[in-house]
Length: 155
Image (tube, rainbow, N blue to C red; front, side, top):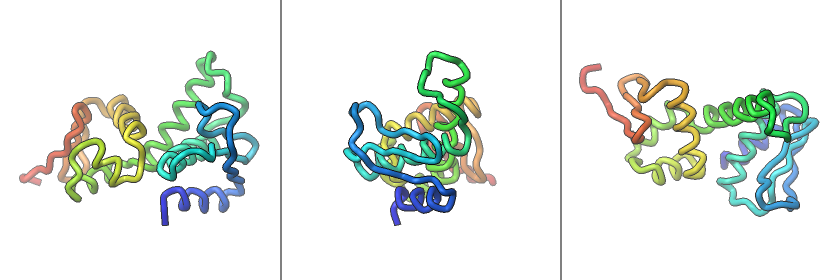
Protein backbone atom coordinates (compact mmCIF):
# COMPACT_ATOMS: atom_id res chain seq x y z
CA UNK A 1 0.00 0.00 0.00
CA UNK A 2 1.42 3.39 -0.98
CA UNK A 3 1.90 6.26 1.45
CA UNK A 4 -0.76 8.14 -0.48
CA UNK A 5 -3.26 5.31 0.05
CA UNK A 6 -2.41 5.20 3.76
CA UNK A 7 -3.16 8.93 4.08
CA UNK A 8 -6.37 8.51 2.06
CA UNK A 9 -7.50 5.90 4.58
CA UNK A 10 -6.57 8.18 7.49
CA UNK A 11 -8.53 11.02 5.91
CA UNK A 12 -11.54 8.74 5.48
CA UNK A 13 -11.35 7.65 9.14
CA UNK A 14 -11.28 11.32 10.16
CA UNK A 15 -14.23 12.18 7.91
CA UNK A 16 -12.08 14.32 5.61
CA UNK A 17 -13.03 14.12 1.93
CA UNK A 18 -10.13 14.05 -0.56
CA UNK A 19 -10.71 15.09 -4.15
CA UNK A 20 -8.21 15.15 -6.98
CA UNK A 21 -8.90 17.91 -9.46
CA UNK A 22 -7.19 20.10 -12.01
CA UNK A 23 -6.23 23.30 -10.23
CA UNK A 24 -6.61 26.70 -11.87
CA UNK A 25 -2.90 27.30 -11.28
CA UNK A 26 -0.21 24.63 -11.53
CA UNK A 27 1.49 26.33 -8.56
CA UNK A 28 -1.34 25.15 -6.32
CA UNK A 29 -0.60 21.59 -5.29
CA UNK A 30 -3.26 21.20 -2.62
CA UNK A 31 -5.80 23.03 -0.50
CA UNK A 32 -7.69 22.27 2.68
CA UNK A 33 -10.98 23.71 3.88
CA UNK A 34 -14.03 22.53 5.80
CA UNK A 35 -12.95 18.87 6.06
CA UNK A 36 -12.18 18.70 2.34
CA UNK A 37 -8.76 18.38 0.74
CA UNK A 38 -8.19 19.14 -2.92
CA UNK A 39 -5.08 17.61 -4.52
CA UNK A 40 -3.77 18.71 -7.91
CA UNK A 41 -4.52 15.79 -10.23
CA UNK A 42 -1.38 16.44 -12.31
CA UNK A 43 1.07 15.49 -9.54
CA UNK A 44 3.03 12.25 -9.31
CA UNK A 45 2.01 9.73 -6.66
CA UNK A 46 5.01 10.69 -4.50
CA UNK A 47 4.15 14.40 -4.80
CA UNK A 48 0.51 13.65 -3.92
CA UNK A 49 1.69 11.82 -0.77
CA UNK A 50 3.70 14.84 0.37
CA UNK A 51 0.88 17.27 -0.42
CA UNK A 52 -1.77 15.10 1.23
CA UNK A 53 0.40 14.82 4.36
CA UNK A 54 0.70 18.61 4.53
CA UNK A 55 -3.03 19.11 3.97
CA UNK A 56 -3.79 16.57 6.71
CA UNK A 57 -1.40 18.65 8.83
CA UNK A 58 -3.73 21.59 8.20
CA UNK A 59 -6.68 19.45 9.26
CA UNK A 60 -4.96 18.60 12.55
CA UNK A 61 -3.25 21.92 13.32
CA UNK A 62 -4.86 24.89 11.51
CA UNK A 63 -8.01 26.91 11.86
CA UNK A 64 -9.71 29.53 9.73
CA UNK A 65 -8.67 30.92 6.35
CA UNK A 66 -4.87 31.11 6.19
CA UNK A 67 -4.48 31.71 2.44
CA UNK A 68 -3.15 35.23 3.06
CA UNK A 69 0.45 34.48 4.02
CA UNK A 70 1.19 38.16 4.75
CA UNK A 71 0.13 37.74 8.38
CA UNK A 72 2.40 36.19 10.99
CA UNK A 73 -0.40 34.06 12.43
CA UNK A 74 -1.18 32.50 9.05
CA UNK A 75 2.51 31.84 8.31
CA UNK A 76 2.87 30.15 11.70
CA UNK A 77 -0.11 27.90 10.97
CA UNK A 78 1.33 27.03 7.54
CA UNK A 79 4.67 26.13 9.13
CA UNK A 80 2.96 24.09 11.84
CA UNK A 81 1.06 22.03 9.23
CA UNK A 82 4.24 21.46 7.21
CA UNK A 83 6.17 20.45 10.31
CA UNK A 84 3.44 17.94 11.15
CA UNK A 85 3.79 16.46 7.67
CA UNK A 86 7.59 16.31 7.89
CA UNK A 87 7.49 14.46 11.19
CA UNK A 88 4.75 12.12 9.95
CA UNK A 89 6.46 11.16 6.66
CA UNK A 90 10.12 11.56 7.62
CA UNK A 91 10.60 10.69 11.26
CA UNK A 92 14.14 10.58 12.62
CA UNK A 93 13.76 6.82 12.98
CA UNK A 94 12.88 6.53 9.29
CA UNK A 95 16.01 8.47 8.35
CA UNK A 96 18.04 5.94 10.38
CA UNK A 97 16.18 3.06 8.66
CA UNK A 98 17.08 4.52 5.27
CA UNK A 99 20.72 4.75 6.33
CA UNK A 100 20.71 1.18 7.67
CA UNK A 101 19.20 0.09 4.33
CA UNK A 102 22.17 1.64 2.55
CA UNK A 103 20.70 4.94 1.36
CA UNK A 104 23.31 7.67 1.75
CA UNK A 105 22.49 10.50 -0.68
CA UNK A 106 19.48 12.79 -0.35
CA UNK A 107 18.06 11.27 -3.52
CA UNK A 108 18.43 7.70 -2.19
CA UNK A 109 16.95 8.61 1.19
CA UNK A 110 13.99 10.42 -0.44
CA UNK A 111 13.45 7.44 -2.74
CA UNK A 112 13.56 5.01 0.22
CA UNK A 113 11.04 7.14 2.14
CA UNK A 114 8.79 7.72 -0.92
CA UNK A 115 8.99 11.51 -0.65
CA UNK A 116 10.28 14.14 -3.02
CA UNK A 117 13.86 15.27 -2.59
CA UNK A 118 12.62 18.83 -1.90
CA UNK A 119 10.28 17.55 0.82
CA UNK A 120 13.26 15.75 2.42
CA UNK A 121 15.41 18.90 2.20
CA UNK A 122 12.64 20.93 3.86
CA UNK A 123 12.18 18.28 6.56
CA UNK A 124 15.90 18.28 7.32
CA UNK A 125 15.77 22.08 7.66
CA UNK A 126 12.85 21.67 10.10
CA UNK A 127 14.85 19.19 12.19
CA UNK A 128 17.88 21.46 12.12
CA UNK A 129 15.74 24.33 13.45
CA UNK A 130 14.32 22.01 16.11
CA UNK A 131 17.51 20.22 17.25
CA UNK A 132 20.48 22.23 15.99
CA UNK A 133 23.28 20.67 13.94
CA UNK A 134 22.65 17.08 15.07
CA UNK A 135 20.61 14.78 17.29
CA UNK A 136 20.90 11.24 18.59
CA UNK A 137 18.45 8.47 17.77
CA UNK A 138 19.33 5.32 19.69
CA UNK A 139 22.82 4.27 18.64
CA UNK A 140 22.84 6.70 15.73
CA UNK A 141 23.72 10.37 15.41
CA UNK A 142 22.02 12.28 12.61
CA UNK A 143 24.01 15.28 11.41
CA UNK A 144 21.73 17.63 9.49
CA UNK A 145 24.20 19.69 7.44
CA UNK A 146 25.37 17.90 5.45
CA UNK A 147 22.93 15.04 6.03
CA UNK A 148 24.93 12.14 7.48
CA UNK A 149 23.98 9.29 9.82
CA UNK A 150 26.71 7.86 12.03
CA UNK A 151 26.32 4.67 14.05
CA UNK A 152 28.17 4.67 17.35
CA UNK A 153 30.26 1.63 18.13
CA UNK A 154 30.25 2.36 21.89
CA UNK A 155 26.52 2.29 22.60
